[in-house]
Length: 85
Image (tube, rainbow, N blue to C red; front, side):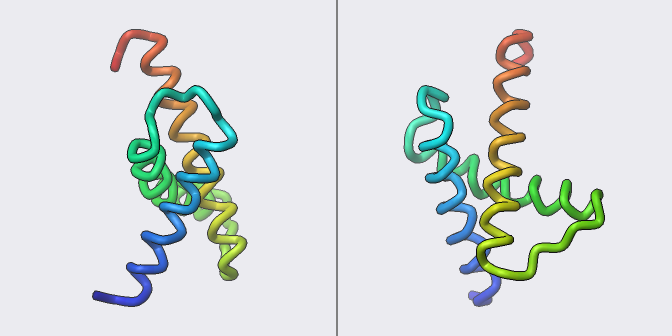
């Protein structure tokens, strides 16, 4: 397994944990928060690249992943509220 992929997963899991702590009561549970963190890492990377922002350090990548996870949770919450999900 590629070391980059392992770091990506670890950052995503940590971002999910942090996001879960920041948004208590989101209703996804521990495993759901971790999955949201990993998916949020993808989303955060995509959004940051759209804005022309690169995160090179571990802390920068973690912040990017947490922001992506928060945006993903907000999107899921919006879709749930509309009755789409």
